[in-house]
Image 1 (cartoon, one colour):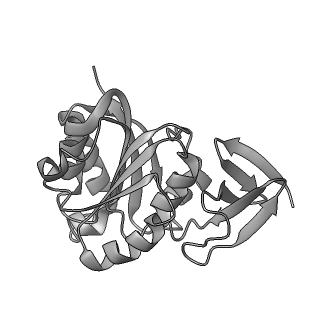
Image 2 (image 1 turned 180 degrees about the vertical axis):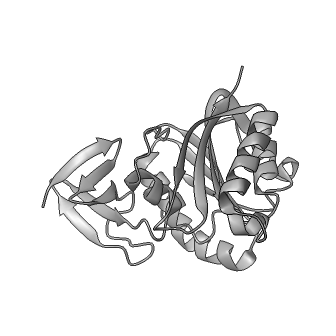
Length: 221
């Protein structure tokens, strides 16, 4: 088994990736735990996490650092946020989730991860939680709805630092089932540009996620 560190608290294990477990001994989604030197690594499943799929597909801009402040939109039950928590051990990950059912599961995950901050609210209304979130280094959005690009832009404008990176996971079928996914991707990329962001990297997520793309953005000055 070949194990190599490829980022802060991120490792490649053969053809898989893993993060150093923030809460040793605790699994989030029955992921495999691997002892390595004085660390415990959690395998990061690309079929359960679009960010993991992006990394495996060649993501070159990985903005998450030990002390990063992150706003995560669409936290769901906490699979991907838990791996970001593993990386940003000295930072904070503000996690917005609209569903009370998903939030109950997320609270179990965050109970042993002090850097995960749960926020039960609607990501289309960022002013609702403006008093809870500081300026952030990364805005990450994975909200499958028709206005997913607009809500990402609204949150980015409100919370992102000048040098922040944005990661937007686009699900084409949630925007328009009648359009070709590639046409939707071009359309949403244009909307990002009109909103003052420049796409610096884009990665289609097949075969892990059908009709999905990851846009990595920064402010265009």
